[in-house]
Image (cartoon, rainbow, N blue to C red; front, side, top):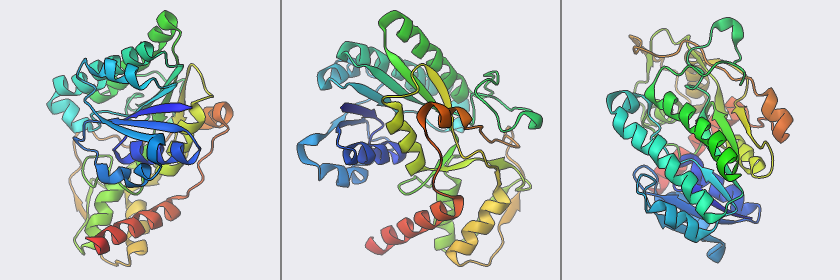
Length: 317
């Protein structure tokens, strides 16, 4: 199989590139390098002609021809403006990347004669704020996003259904929980584990917003890319939640991370940020059924790997 990965130089995208290459596929990574980095693709380049990198911006209509020229069988669409706060302060920019950019990617997939698109949706935003009694939230929950970012992810899901009807383009949308792992940028709201790791290893104080009792579903990046790899041939026409199904409070997260880093200092509490969800956890039973997928890496093991990766990077600097 030949796959194109948009956002292929990013945290999740580059990890997916490595997984697909390891599975024996040919891979093209497309990225504008706004947040991704070529350093994430060092291992991929070792695969020689089976890997190639194309610099391009999905907002640019020319990317349609670029994708067509690479002739992928499957497009893994991960390129995005991924910060909810940015979507609020600059909704136009968010829509240009996440909606218009996605339309360009879909048009490129059609022009290339691709069989399928696998799309990175957002399990943390498309469902809005589900009531506690429906947690863990399933794919049947109404999609009532409360942020422009969530709206954009929902809209692209609608485009996927339209492109299937109009062009016969197969699709799977993966609603991701809070993804963490090596290569994660320690900036932005989804990077709390990377942020805490950087601060803990620098012997600086970590800040917890609100009470710290708010919960999230933290899923390790290797498990996420396993879901993408499986979706190349499975899960057609389905939205699938990719999370652990386990709630972890921010307070508990900090305790685990501080212990792993050998730090005894407590976190500093500060007022809650407006609009932050109180609880979020995903029901992953449909992904288990449709993909034969299940999370494999525990929170503790994942955090250990992240801290080891950060320490290795600091030692090499």
